[in-house]
Amino acid sequence: MDKFLVLVNGLPGSGKSTLGRALARSLNAQFLSKDTVKEALATCLDDATDLRALGGIAMDTVWALAQAIPGTVVIDSWWFKPRDLYLARTGIRKSGASRAIEIWCDVPAEIARARYAGRNRPALYEDHQRLAEDWDTWAAQAAPLGLIPTLAVDTTGPVDCSHLAGQIHLTAGPVSNEHRLTSSP
Image (cartoon, rainbow, N blue to C red; front, side):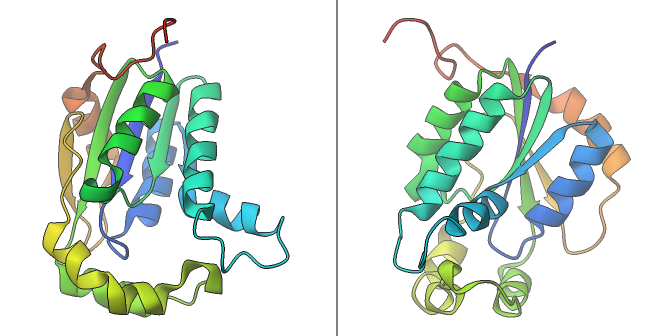
């Protein structure tokens, strides 16, 4: 069975997790959420709030799981292109996927910001600090990674995931050899 990778990307509050879960059901795929893995890892520590590296550790775990899971995998994360392009390229390579697509959750920044600000999440996310310090930069520079074929999806409201699944199969492309792991170092 070919490995098929679907990355669900977008600003915090853009609807990635909601879309990713529903899309995984429509694609009969496994769903991996960086935030879910991050929270699970945080339970292993007495205090995870000061461990900034936890997000990266969670993402490494997500990529390892994606590699181990056969078939179709949907991954939900906020990949900020200026920060995460190399890491995403490495993760796609590590996954062993033969085909892939990026779904960009397209929502006005002010809607995503309001959703993000209204969340009640564990302190380890430092949402209030990130909103104050990072949001303007994120909103100004938010863009798809552009490493694989990309579909922009309006996530201001409900999405017809059955229709989207069809579009995904038509749009997804092969993962180029530059993105795939080879047996040589």
